[in-house]
Length: 172
Image (tube, rainbow, N blue to C red; front, side, top):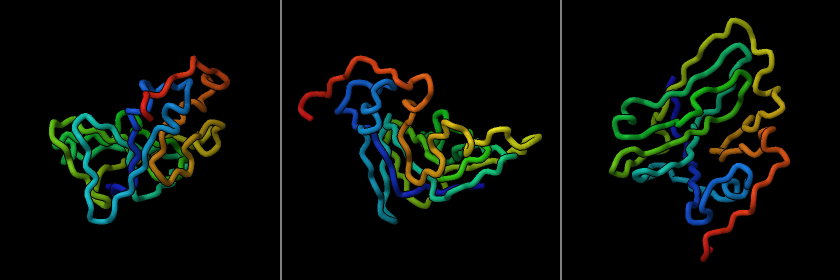
């Protein structure tokens, strides 16, 4: 099943912090700029750029299915990667799918809201999940509607930990 690209994108402001640090949530949670593209207007993905996008469609995955997200080969042939690692949607998830968009090409590529940007494939499980995503204590993205930045700091291994404070890049 094909899904379409939404109109909201998030980009990291690479000039504000020298590093994205999971122990310093402000380095990524407050380090993103939101861009909303109007209908018919392109969103230009620059060479080497990484942005978060979102599908127009909201999905709801039953407890006995898993969903795989795959980029379209027509976009791949332009150098556009739709997901870096998050190609799996858990049983019980509900919301839009955040897309991890990268441009591997040496040329900018225009993407348009509403264009078919990825495919999802459903896989039947042998039994319903014992603990579907919507019932996990750390289901950080349940019900998302916009592209969501990493919520890695909510993982149990980062709870209560803090690394040395990072300094902002001067001038900002």
